[in-house]
Amino acid sequence: MKNGARRRWRLRLYVAGQTPKSITALANLKRLCDSHLAGRYSIEVVDLLEKPQLARRDDIVVIPTLVRQLPPPIRKIIGDLSNVERVLVGLDVVPRDVEK
Amino acid sequence: MTPTVRRRKFAPTKRAGNGSRPARRPLAKAPTGIPGLDEITNGGLPRGRPTLVCGGAGCGKTLLAMEFLVRGALEYDEPGVFMSFEETTDDLVENAQSLGFDLQRLSARRRLVLDHVQLEREKHMESGEYDLEGLFIRLGHAIETIHAKRVVLDTIEVLFSGLSDKFIVRAELARLFRWLKAKRVTAIVTGEREGERLTRHGLEEFVSDCVILLDQRVMEQSATRRLRILKYRGSAHGGNEMPFLIDDHGLSVLPITSLGLTHQASTAHLSSGVTGLDAMFGKKGYFRGNSVLVSGTAGTGKSSVASHFVEAACRRGERCLYFAFEESAGQITRNMRSIGIDLEPWTRRDLLRVHAQRPTALGLEAHLVAMHRLIDDWKPRVVVVDPVTNMAAVGSEIEVRAMLARLIDFMKLRQITALFTSLTEGGTTAERTDLGVSSLMDVWMLLGNPEANGERNRTLQIVKARGMAHSNQVREFVMTDHGVTLVDISRRADGSVAIGSARDAQESGRSDDPKPSRRRKVE
Image (cartoon, rainbow over the protein chains, first blue to last red):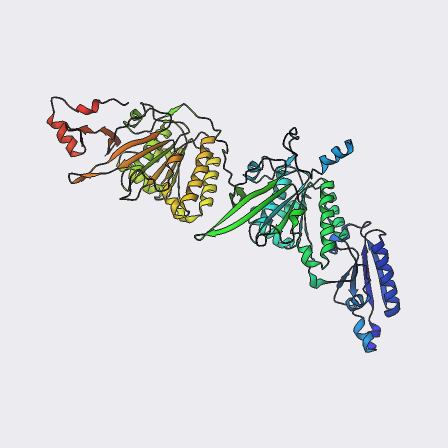
């Protein structure tokens, strides 16, 4: 648990404007982080409509895309994040919480 | 009601009714710059619209698409975006290098954007609903940065394996194709053929304007690539399979050049170069632009007739290209010198070029492309193919015939006079050409060496000569140290012919009336 306590989650969410899917995704992500990773996470929202060049640089095709930059390795989760179970697996949160 | 009509102009999804409608304005086209492809499509791909290029693995889809972009950027001032869903940009750069294209330089000059999209299923997880807006933004941004007019998506079908929701992918693809049209970019979308289906995931249903199918077959150890225009809305196209080739110049498609047999028929004459032979054609020789077939068994003098023709052409100052499929250039020169034909000065003056190659060195199509290229590069007036029958080593009879038909048409369009020699197998009927090619030819001469009275003597006869009065007589074909001479065959009193020493005997026996039958006129 000591190890787990020091872990931090750096997350980046790619959206394209204020679409319903983007709004849903951000809301889902915040709720989920607050309940499982409180105080251990940061979220950066990248709007590709404002920075279209980042789509190519960061290899984004699907919107919304959540990129887990930390902890390593980098993982991508696509969709509006409505399937909480899968997001937790993708963020590598579930196993430890189950142990708890 | 007008809005309906106007909308149809931009999305012509309805079929032309009963054909009685006035002809539509000709479609705007974007030339690919690929030799042959623009000919068979009457000018290129539908401008501002997507074209589907499909085929099996390794059929050349990616290279065709890449050449379309490179030539667009270099020759038509139309920059392009290549979005690759499979190959990495490094692989693309390397593969294009083998065609002589420098993609890095084009990218640096902002004439090309290479973008590799990775969407492997293992690299992401899915949770909830999504769309492909990222792809639109990414492609749109690339198009805007270089003002691209052309786009390639190779192959977008990867989306189906990368994403689990097929329904979303289909809906987004439909949106993408509408978006591409709205952007007015000329696009190539590639798809992998699977079994009887054109593309694995039915991309053809999104592309209604133009569909091109590529195919690669291996026949008798040589790979043959073929291209077919399956569909081209609003544009005439031949549905035939066209061979194509990929080499260090890129792609070349070989169309049947004179689909309508529209070439000009010349009435200018050319000397055959053989003493006595022009007289058999009413003293004039062949027509310019004729295709002449000289067939005969081994050792009947086919190459000699060819060389005489070459020499006569060079004397007139005309360029002559000699395709030798049996002997080397040196061998031909030496052999011809033995019968008094010296070709070397013409080689030195670059009026004669001998291109010697084993038929088996290349596939049939590759030969045809190579010949087209040499002819187009150097523009000879006279071409010799010696012997054309050796092509049978690399293709079936039908294929060789088809290839010859294309080659002949190609040369006729350019008013090139061509002479083909054909080796007949010993023992077969002389009139039967091995490849059944005689019907393609304007002039057909048959050489023989019948054996009689313990000796073989050479003969020549004209089997056909389109549009020319010609002799129906068999002549004796004599090789001297100053070339070939045709000698009239003497007739004995009983009507049989005397040839060789029998003729000599007959002629010397009638010293009071020398060479009696040689006076016979040419009819």
